[in-house]
Length: 130
Image 1 (cartoon, one colour):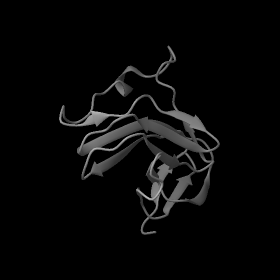
Image 2: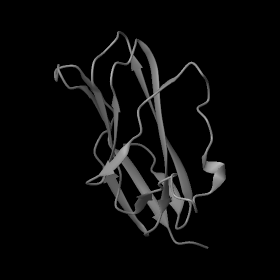
Image 3: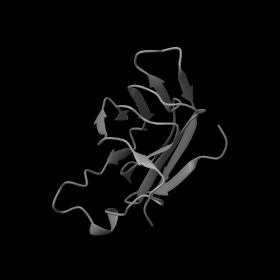
């Protein structure tokens, strides 16, 4: 699992997921599990910081349709991604002190469940605000 992602209470982190597709796919779900110490920031709220409205690093990336948060997982859906790189990103705020491990991020094609990919486990550490 390697070194943990570390943050202090109140910190905002950008979570970026990059998916490399060797060939076109149909209906790909990407599930990114999050620890309970974090909350997802909804950028559509009026009080959200404007600096969070950054654009992807390059126009070469295709972006997933808007993600949604459910049952401790940020989910993204790509309808018909072409071969290449897909990038999804969102922001979270560290709320609670603690240490946890989340399951792998998983990408899978809905019509062909044998076509999937996943990461390793991820360790997270949130320390007290100074």
